[in-house]
Amino acid sequence: MSPPPSGRHRVPFLHEKRIEREADLLLAEWTAKGNPVALPIPLDDLVELHLELTYEVEDLRERLKDLGVLGAIWFDENIIRIDTTLDPREHPSMLGRFNFTLAHEIGHWRLHRAHLRANPDEAMLFETNAEPAFVCRDGDKRPEEWQADAFAGCLLMPRPRLREAWAEWRGADDPLALTDLDVRAVHADRKLNENLAMEQFCRPLAERFAVSAPAMRIRLQAMELLVRELEPRLF
Amino acid sequence: MGQRKAHFGTMLRQRRLAKGYSLRKFAELVDVSPTYLSLVETGKAEYPPSAERVRVMAELLGEDPDQWTALAGRMPEDVKGIILNEPEAMPALLRAARGMSADQLRELTKQIERKNQEGKEP
Image (tube, rainbow over all chains, first blue to last red; front, side, top):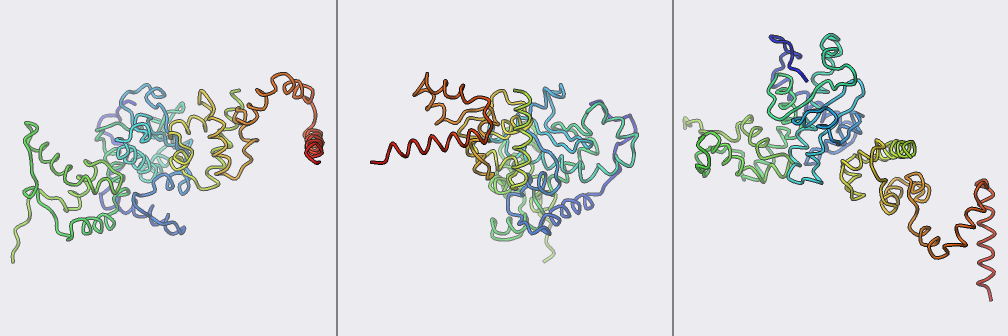
């Protein structure tokens, strides 16, 4: 898919809080139907049974002739497709990335579908001849992709559930500082080493939520449970 | 064969969702990958699921295993064995029965069962 016209974004700005509210709302809709929200979050049920979207795992790289694609969504056909390279049965280490990609596509559905419907010019640019509305690749930081990533983080690791799991795991709800971790000089880049140390630390929590360690690290940092330095205390 | 595969796939997805099984959950229960289950549901799988897997699918979904095995383009394992045990007489019987209606076949089955029963009685 070609990039959006220069100087224009396909989607309006959305504040992180608004994105988190939308993820919480989706979970609330699911529980209102009498369904439990156990961990890990039942993403597949949300997609197929609640949102009633068709969901397939297939060779998207071949379909879209794009080697970097991980997932895509077709608004007109109500279909989410995830690339087979993330299939967690074939590649168990990909479970976290599979879940994140699926949650990311749900993010496009919840955050962007209405906007594209209301702005047919935008939709026409990207959804013609059975082309997907959004094609998602690793590391794509355009606003719509950033927003869908933020939504995925909030959906997979809901704030109250993560706080609860953190407190249970740590024995306290205090944040943890990087200074308490063993940062090894694996790479020349200090920040990369710090991220690796944090990811190593939060791996057990990541497994509980069936997300990757980087996804858990980013969410814990956003919730200020993992911090680079502790704020000095007044007392 | 293409139409059969597409029909089976569509029916499988409909029944799976009606029973509340998600793609990954159902794939896990029948011991296949989500990718393969997607291929079957979209009629794109090179080979249909094995007769044993179709039986498990049918049982999970409360469907008739023999009917589903046929819809999937497979032959139940026991039927395969029956034909192989009587490689001349059994295909001849099937060929002779070809073209009969379902009701006629059921009646014939009852007659065969009665005959088998008589043979067992002292």
